[in-house]
Length: 260
Ligand code: SF4
Image 1 (cartoon, rainbow, N blue to C red):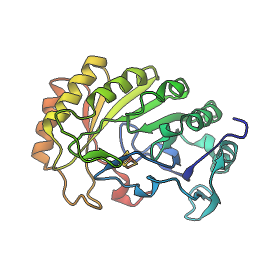
Image 2: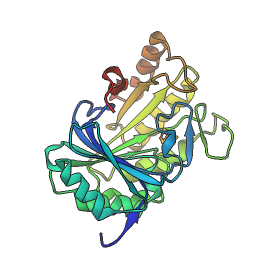
Image 3: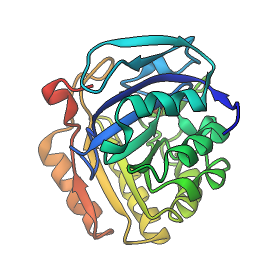
């Protein structure tokens, strides 16, 4: 790990709010910078490199202290120990997009793995050139499959949904499945294209039909003011389940009770 330093946004203890490990105690390490612009993003403060990183003072506390970036990986590990690292089920490397700092993500995973928690990588699922440097240190890859109807790259306009991000996601998934566990999450909005979702399901089945697909109805915030209708969501889940055996509808839970 040496003196390697990265850009970090925050470090805090909570429980996982989404996906199949929902409710499990999780220490979140949020890295800075993202090259996408999702309509529903709940972390726009991570899009740019952060000047300071906020670190929870102790597990369960609402107090944080701020430390200037860049921050050494060793300092993050020390702070994680202060937050009772070993008593968590998972450490989540999240963002932003952690794979935009692949050396930092790898060093962190290396330093934290073997101390108790499983290493959970939350990623936008497009950095397929960076993933091979990191994937052998990861226990769970939680990969988004972005829909061109709702997501654009920084500085670009929305793509033709018929083209989408499918090729890049499929290439990413072929590497991600080297990890002991991988699942795919698609956020569904009122404007998401059903054809895009079903094309994603077909691509996932082509890589490995045992991979779990989570359909996550969007949590209204910011520019997103409505949820997808329940009838449409259930019909979409049924159509996806005709392609892939493992499909679940799981909304975000932490906004329900105000957890970070
Ligand atoms: S990939 Fe994540 S951090 Fe980046 S814009 Fe989308 S939701 Fe926000």
